[in-house]
Image (tube, rainbow, N blue to C red):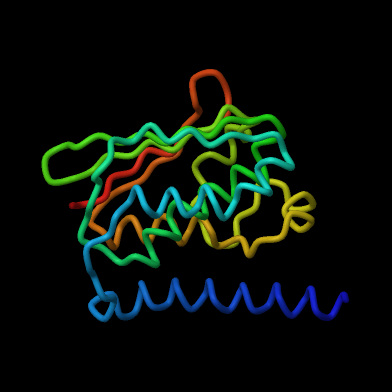
Length: 181
């Protein structure tokens, strides 16, 4: 069982490193198509439902319908899935995740926030670094590769956007990011 768990962890690590390398080394080879953001978030809500129920969490999607961008479906999915998985793993039980969006010129601006426990001030500026972990002991138990937020940042940048992390009013973390239509 331990060998199987470690092989799954190694597989995840290799997949995440491969994704980052592809974005770094060959961004021109990444295919773009019409991507329905609302459908991706709906899929993530379904895929994480059981885990969220286990922690008494809610995901509230207050985005307008019809958000379509020209992007890479897999990477856009990774943005929203990694943010959701991090909130599930680290925000704490009975947390609410809220996703909002509004159109701004040739971009969609998104806010992904939770009302969880947040992180210390000293960690906020380093959240997007590869392999950076706020709490090494807790992170190991929760799984993950330490590359999720690095993938989020690089995927956002590949879509001509930018991302920042801050404290959410009322507690927790807030990620503001934009993605070009």
